[in-house]
Image (cartoon, rainbow, N blue to C red):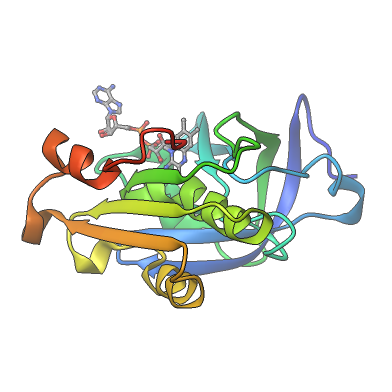
Length: 203
Ligand SMILES: Cc1cc2nc3c(=O)[nH]c(=O)nc-3n(C[C@H](O)[C@H](O)[C@H](O)COP(=O)(O)OP(=O)(O)OC[C@H]3O[C@@H](n4cnc5c(N)ncnc54)[C@H](O)[C@@H]3O)c2cc1C
């Protein structure tokens, strides 16, 4: 039995993927008896409970995988300077490990509408967004715009996967990359410009 105390369950790590110099994805094996408990919507997150230097830490990580499209649950953890959990997860988790994970939670999910979607993401904030984009492309005919800010080109998480989605769905997906070292920070003027006339969109 994989259930622990409270809402936590022990899940096996099926894979660890190096996404960028400072972010790794952790892919989980969800056993058959937990499939229903771990059913999720795009935009929801998992809470990981770990022990670092004798301290128990709980941190939330959005699911970057999409239900019904990706075979396994995947979260992506980006290092935070001096962050305890994010660095521990990047440094210590390996394929075959077991982690304590709470079932999916969260309300940052797609609404049942057909209006355009305008999504703003920065750095690791792309994780719930890529899941939402994949689901919206698969289950709706909504127009989708992503404005995605990163420090530089090397730090763009899911760069190739986004490029593949764009080439397959260029008719209704638009992606605007903003790089701090090239374009400067995103500011209100840019937000106004990118939203344009889509004021009835979901943001
Ligand atoms: C719903 C949700 C979804 C999320 N999804 C993702 C995701 O997909 N990917 C992702 O990478 N992150 C995600 N996060 C963020 C994640 O949960 C963690 O907050 C992040 O990984 C940092 O945790 P940490 O333990 O490494 O940092 P912490 O150790 O909590 O430190 C955070 C910052 O506070 C500073 N700090 C710590 N202690 C002190 C102190 N005593 N005094 C002063 N400063 C201090 C640290 O130096 C650091 O800069 C999500 C958060 C939420 C709420």
